[in-house]
View (cartoon, helix red, strand yellow):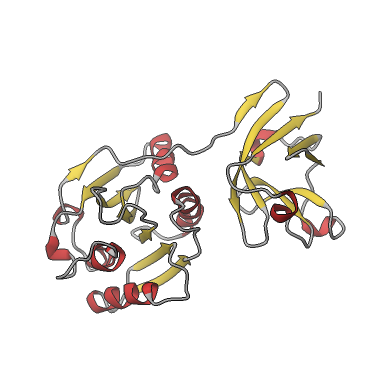
Amino acid sequence: MSIITILTDFGIQHEFVGIMKGVIYGIAPDVRLVDFTHNISPQNIKEGAMSLWRAYPFFPKNTIHLFVVDPGVGTRRRPLAAKIGDQYFVGPDNGLLTPIIEDAERDNKPMEFVNLQNPKYWLAKVSKTFHGRDIFSPVAAHLANGVALSELGPSFTDPVRVEMPKPMKTANGWQAHVSVMDMFGNLTLDLPAAALQNRTDVLFRLHGVEISGVVESYGHRAPGELVAVIDSEDYLELAEVNGNIAKRLKAAPGDMVEVILSE
């Protein structure tokens, strides 16, 4: 039984995600569907990229990841399907796969990309504004039924990429960036904890506010204190205990964070 995950910026107030699921079940009724999230900020490709990158490794091989954050819908942007390593991806070719592609290149994983040009595997009527329903959902369902990537369209080797912020080494530490803001307002940095080499004599500076040291978890400090922790993906994270550091410091993804190691 195949698994299809779904990630969108559609929200859950309206019917769009449910329609996509209906299309999938109509083609592959035995598939299992998993919602990653539908709360990606509207048109925020980088946020979608980080969310998919953090989530997909926890799924078994041959999982199909359907993603629709698609500000270019109806334009000349390519619709794609891909196999990266041992997992499949279906969605717009707009850079959302960038961190997954970069990891695959680093780890020498095989990659295959196809331009979805075979309407046999689409809905009969294709709109200009809802390719999630008309192209991507049916393609994901046909993949789940065993259709080969090569049947879906011609291959290509130049997927679109977006510039993702990366930490930079400085004379006394790192210049990092906020990469993820969760619903609690916690701020994950793009700096892995391993970069600190187990040192805890570290100072974080964000918007002029300083946070000293790294604690084991939020509960090791009093409510209202600002802390740094190592998140569940082994990246550094800034938080307000029982509060919202993003609101408190008016911070957002992309903001620069100084990470200073004591001399």
